[in-house]
Length: 88
Image 1 (cartoon, rainbow, N blue to C red):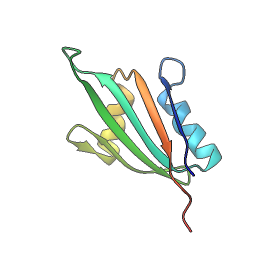
Image 2: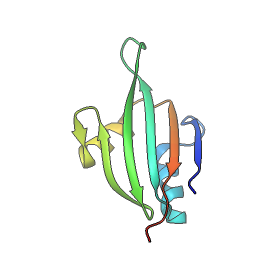
Image 3: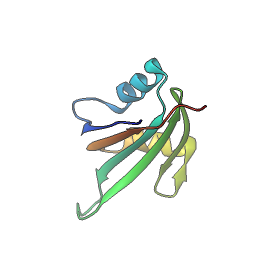
């Protein structure tokens, strides 16, 4: 069964968080929330990880490498990570 963890990216930076997935060869979905310009609705970025490797990333209309660059550059506040079961 999968588990979930969430937290503040001021305490654990995105590169460190991705490094934890890579070091443990974990699989999961990482959702990142950051405030929009008027702080009304948080924008969301998603990173899908399989066996520690990033498979796909989305941020707004950007995907994959461009989305990762945006996620690294933006002022992200919170993360929510959900593990995925291992492949059979």
